[in-house]
Image (cartoon, rainbow, N blue to C red):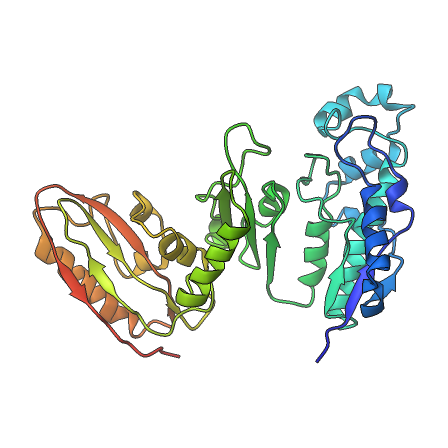
Length: 363
């Protein structure tokens, strides 16, 4: 069955200007819309002129003081807002320009209307090329972003849906969205982004995994320079052949403790019949090597297999094997579980265990 696509476009949104020399250029939205028209894509979509978000809509996430400031400040009166400019991080990267609040209202309204239509099953897919300002925080602007339309849209979706998966493929880390939902398990944030020294915003390390109820509902995939089409195709091939990031496998293929002086690695493949945080699959299956220190993190395994900083000491190899056996036996009665990749120092012992295990998926 064909999907119903709602496309939101405001012909005035491209008329705003951040200022001379600023890299953020809303007029590119008009160019994108021109391509949509000339390629005939609009014939496959329902085109809407979007609703303009109100101050009340924006305050569903942002503080009232911050939104009130955005509504009142202008290039002609900003000298009287020196304290607020500093407090709300409005300045060079996020300048005050003519029509600032109206610009925020237009792109935020489109995202909010898209979420509303999805909730009411008016469309299956909603597109707002003007949105996606993912750096804005609750109390401040950041990275050319003033109002976080993504967070506001997700909050609308949560009225009708128990959980939302957010995937961010911008070159920059989606820090504002991550921060907004860092403590909840109702929103899982996934961000693929460039990561390195001096690259904005400096967040998005793979160890940022969420906290409290949101622990392991935050996945970051930091990337270095150099990823290209062939790299993506290779990753797709890995996914197709081995499913490291795709559907959870229904069988454990191999559990092994690799022989070698100096380290012991415990590597497994994932099986899941519930909704486990899938980033453990990424870390363990995709990276493909023992990850030092991973055992110290709290995982679902911590309930079954409590480990110390040196889980398999050289003095207790038999205990280590006993614990592994016990853990996998326990998994038979567990509704869901993740893959694992534990690494430990083992300076004076050699262990070898290869076992092919074929356990049917428990439901």
